[in-house]
Image 1: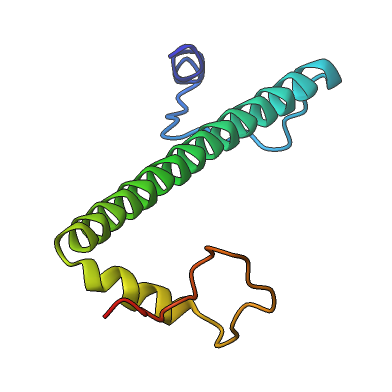
Image 2: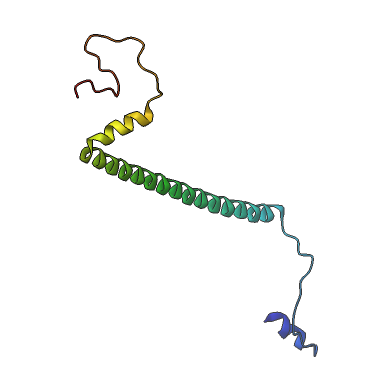
Length: 113
């Protein structure tokens, strides 16, 4: 380098050069700051995209699990008709209907047997 060559003319051997208190123009400093801000915003946007993708994957997995649960329940109900009655009893609040009309069935009471 140029500095070492120039100093060697005066029998000075430079092994390292340290520059301190360097000042730049306001425009240059502002450009560096804006670049850093833009870089951080780009990283933030990428992280947000990854978060949205993960949330979408979780929703898909949840929907698939729900669909599989419904398929299994449907299969069980179609194979065992008394399970339908069991499910109805599980959801019943214990109250009989207040109004009864002509051919309306009475819940859970089979009078035909």
